[in-house]
Length: 562
Image (cartoon, rainbow, N blue to C red; front, side):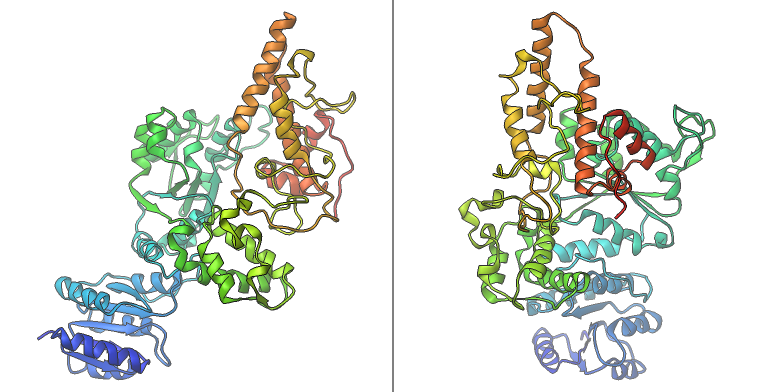
């Protein structure tokens, strides 16, 4: 007859499992602590061990390690009420057969035991405990699948493709794969393929030799070199330019690359983890992504579920973020009233976990009482069907990061505000007074065609004084508005039409490029209140570069150091 041992300091859990396993003919034996279980091990090992992780005295992880040393053939199923990544990964990498979060269905526990009896195999590992990746919490089955996948994939060097919507925590998953792997001693280097200009991306990834191009005054390591022995995380891989896709494919195929301007092959010794929120299969069909590169990256795919797919995790995440926000921002941690919790669980969360985290920061600062009631939540969450979720009604729209104006891409999706236009960035198609130093005046024949651009500019530029504006969160996707490319296309068409009407040829690409750079840099400077070093860091460029661009584009203004 099969023998199953149950170790848990909770008497009710022991009672339930003893009777459930007994009805199934599994001959259970129960223990209140790990020490008594180990003492019984001297008389022979059970066929399956089911134990709690968090117990007084010796923990379940320590008991698991002892079983791996003294009875390695016994499958171990671990239970815990602490549904976090630390528990899941530590248990799986410690050699657990499976991970069972509390509360669990008794039938599920019985099914796991029967599976363990069939396989009678444990997974090798060690008993190390790992640091929790903030935000990777969850009791939902979808997140438990993610935790299990991390536990199993971390020991491998196989390429992983992480998919999921924006804000779901794809980079957190990538970091967890790195930190729980044998490469944890190496660097975790993250590169956003969509945020780096295509002409700089090759040098960013592979480095360059001195004199390889204008401005290359010294040799520079690339990200592949920096991640040697560690992990290279390529975020937004779907936006990588075609020419770089070809180079990346060669690296993944051959394991070698060359610096820009270099002649000596260099060995790629970094594990590559890629992520995207796009459907790469569709981009392959559209000819925007190489099919052979897709198959190289798609060795193992790990999908991170959206928050609306794991609504049961919203209360757990909200409490976690409120506690962490209180620690970071100072003050007492807020508590959510039952009605507020129900509203949070019912909200669709288009911005996913990132949006929930921003809300918790805002609640920590803005709600005066210790308990957050339903009335304290934004209207978009209190009444999800009211249509308020597309922006903050009335007044100025300010991002949930407390007083910092949202990025231009986020503002483009917001309703127009009634306040005066902010000074600084110049959207496409907006005329500027003479001497402004910013290229962007529209030819007389283009006024009608640029009307949509002007309308968008009003929504983008209707800013507020940062010190006086009411602080309100914007709950929506912090992504480029879907229509900005169409607006740009309309502007380009208008300028081309004005050229044809006037019978003249101009340097249109140069003028639009100047407009773009002026818009981005001026907006970044306004975002950092004139601090150039911080603006350069946020944009991913050097201080010398931003200083030169400010001079070239006529954006000179005193630099602030405060």
